[in-house]
Amino acid sequence: MITKEFDTIAAIATPLGEGAIGIVRLSGTDAITIASKVFKGKDLKQVTSHTINYGHIVENNQIIDEVMLSLMRTPKTFTREDVIEINTHGGLAVTNQILQLLIRHGARLAEPGEFTKRAFLNGRIDLTQAEAIMDLIRAKTDKAMSIAVKQLDGSLSDLINNTRQEILNTLAQVEVNIDYPEYDDVEEMTTALLQEKTQEFEKLLTNLLKTAKRGKILREGLSTAIIGRPNVGKSSLLNTLLREDKAIVTDIEGTTRDVIEEYVNINGVPLKLIDTAGIRETDDVVEQIGVERSKKALKEADLVLLVLNSSEKLTPQDRQLLELSQGSNRIILLNKTDLPQAIEKEQLPDDVLSISVLTKENIDLIEERINQLFFDNAGIVEQDATYLSNTRHISLIEQAVDSLQAVNQGLELGMPVDLLQIDLTRTWEILGQITGDAAPDELITQLFSQFCLGK
Image (cartoon, rainbow, N blue to C red; front, side):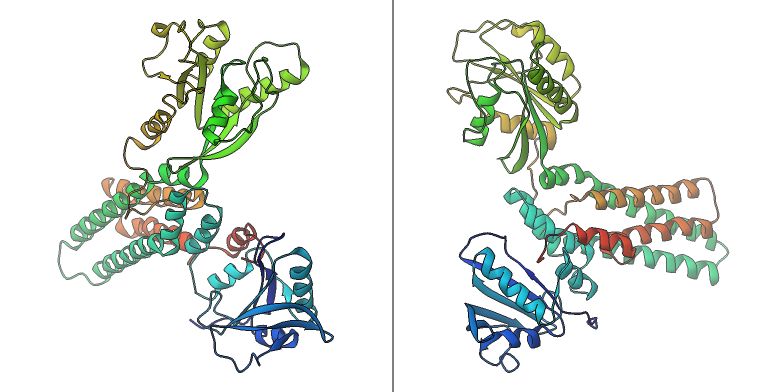
């Protein structure tokens, strides 16, 4: 593919702040020319591609910093353009000064995600791989990272592209049968071919959709509300799962006045833990607001950890929480098993989990219960599986399946084959939106605007 010519862009590619190094990135036709104006060292127009060169960044004969400059010539670069990366000492002042210097010499400040957008527009990657880059940056666990890496390697792209090619082959065969009939039963043959292939495509995409729940959880995490009446050990459980003291823990009821949110990695699954204010009747205005937010968190949560005090009998508040959380994905935790037991277990569901946050008893079983609830006891990530984790991809696959079902229903009703080709062609177009082959410009612009600067 021929690389498109764009202006030259620049941005800081490392997080802002103090660090060992900071990287300022240039990409575009004039990247080497602009860098040559500020770099004192080897002649950049003469050096070999994919080398790193020692020198200084200077302005008006004044040294700004001692640097290592990487030079990569088109087309074997991320953007398929000439790319310069200036490795400078980390720090806000020096990296910003170098960036401003490059802009004064002809570069333009890159928009969010513009380096990756150029890689897409120049055919270096497709849209699923571009989105995988952002997933990789945002991955909170090693399993989420593994899914992103597989998508970046093209596993989803290959599956989608192969399916689109098969659909195209089927459409071509149907067209040939219609335009050049050699047998009297050509209509019957064409209908049988279309039915066989459509069912095959529908099965493949439906199986892919089955991975969506697991993939989306690994990508985005489970919103997990820890609920219970005051002083049952909610904040202590949060601190135990986090392995650090984030929430204030006291014997005074109503200590937690607001919702506290933290991420934790539980057996490869990112949980967004929400420690809620204890739900009870109270005249304290601030605590009332916290209680209302707790009820809201309960309704919106993917997973509910309902904590009860096993050393006390069930209270009306406990019973209210049991009723409120009924129908949700919940795990009932009977805390304080290290104390004499008083709770009426016979009035509770059979699948309660007895734990002690103080002694850490059975805390590890929470992971097993989450696996049972969301992964059907299967392994969380199968080594060679292709996962759907992106909401956009999931929506488009669902639309593609609907189109295929329309074809199958039309065949059963005896509709003309040439009319059913429209739905099959629509399936081909929908799948093209996933990889970017048939994506509108507005979608592409919106997707890349969500990226960080310098990527």
